[in-house]
Image (tube, rainbow, N blue to C red; front, side, top):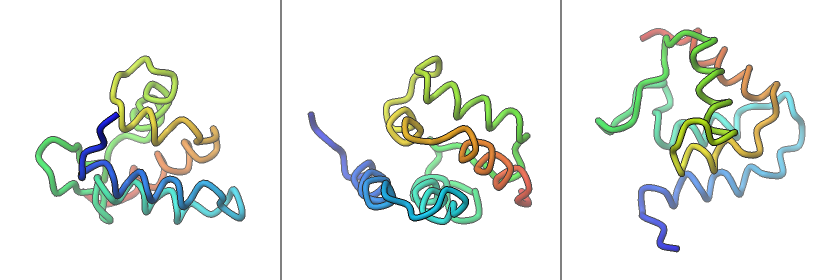
Length: 100
């Protein structure tokens, strides 16, 4: 399997954050999201969606769809596969409350 440079950094962040000390701390997960979607939820790349200000339920449903494979995206499937329901909800809430 060939891993492109654009995927390497987020994947390394994900692996490094796999042993999070406590479930309530999303800083590691959000750092992984920020690698592609930006710290402020505004992506730098034109082919990556902005998450800031999106509808919370929409974001939650998309993360769930990536996790189950209903929505196909190799990198997002990989990133979401270890997320708990609580993490998915917290991530969706975090980005929904950010200003656009």
